[in-house]
Length: 125
Image (cartoon, rainbow, N blue to C red):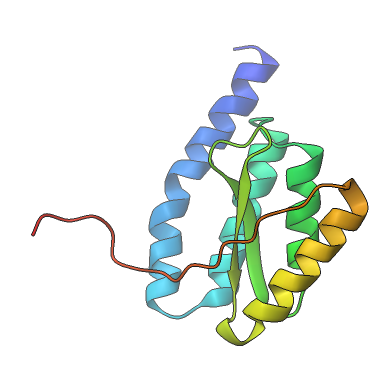
């Protein structure tokens, strides 16, 4: 296996374990572990799978520097898409404002912050 294939496989193997670990941490209310898993996922996607970008890395860095943010990672397949951040409800408004302002100042681009709450997944009724 060449080095690139090894990095990709290493990401996939580690990433496959993270959803169950994240679900367990969230069920227990362990936001520290949940955040660490999100951060690990971002680092793996950036370094091993190489699907991040300068803009996504900046957003994650900005997010992680804000009070109340437990973790952040790229989502929507990377390549310039979106990040998702796990943020305390009481910190959401200032978090959103600061991230938008700092990202715009650094890139000249206007980000769109979408606030959502966890909900049950899709199911048959």
